[in-house]
Length: 223
Image 1 (cartoon, rainbow, N blue to C red):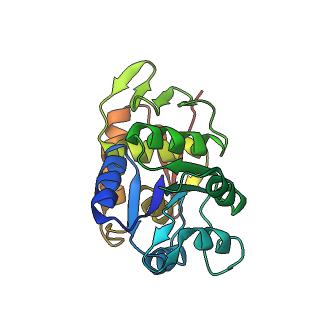
Image 2: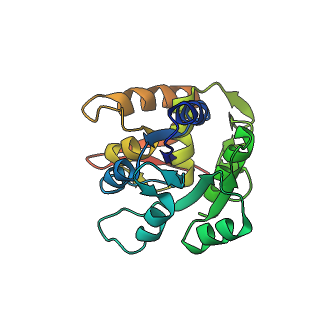
Image 3: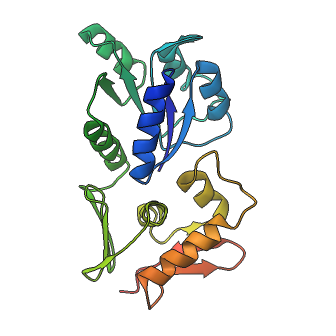
């Protein structure tokens, strides 16, 4: 899952981004509305987290423009992260188009839980994904095949999670890079191929992630 974090406090942004990356999210950070807008014109995000009080404007105005400006790529879900805790502020944020509203200071565990809840609105049931022999527990970050635990790195877990959100679909290397890696990834490297090779090896035989010639990769359910 790729996340845009709009936060003008560099220390808080660094801590939150690091925590989310440790939870297997790909995170891009913006410190101003202009920076966030530039990213939203070129990148598809699964979730965007918006601070409101920013050096060059109000993040709520950007939330409103997501639905009106065709040049902006609207994230699948959006979450307001702000110190504004009045009921009127919460109502304004949700009415502007945000899917959720979390007041600072917040516990990091609650932020992650809310991101999981937003993902469930895309059709995920509970905190556990199941595709054939594969099981992925998003809350504990445990993966199993036929009950046998898989020892996955954060990136491998994130890659498998994306496949399990899209079972049976052909996913190109570009799409995987877009959603599982962040802006620091070099699109000309072999990152996808290398991580995918390691993930396949850990999942074991028979292979569940297959190559579709000249198209990409697909997670299959042999059952």
